[in-house]
Length: 147
Image (tube, rainbow, N blue to C red; front, side, top):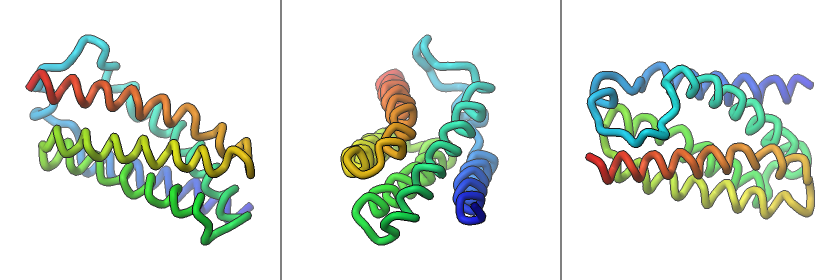
């Protein structure tokens, strides 16, 4: 149980820290955006829920096979997840952020595929994450095109 708490605290805490230190700010507010962009208050709520799901899935994988391919895919998606905000909101690199999101979605799909036969719950915990990142990719692409 302690290991689960460490995973949840680590993933959620790091996500919150990255969000707090790389806010969208005035630059993002001034960009042209598609009408389907959710309100700003929705993002921290969605990401907190997703980070808990990501952490539980990662913990389940780590308990079973800490050095396995699925854990490597989990770590890769986490790294890509955590670099997106600095690239987008601090460096203002919309195109590079889109490339990161594409890589992130690929890593998520690989994780799901690897876990599907071993731990269906871990794989299922990533389904909302895959959907959200896919949606985020559509938004990122639209913002890139509009600006």
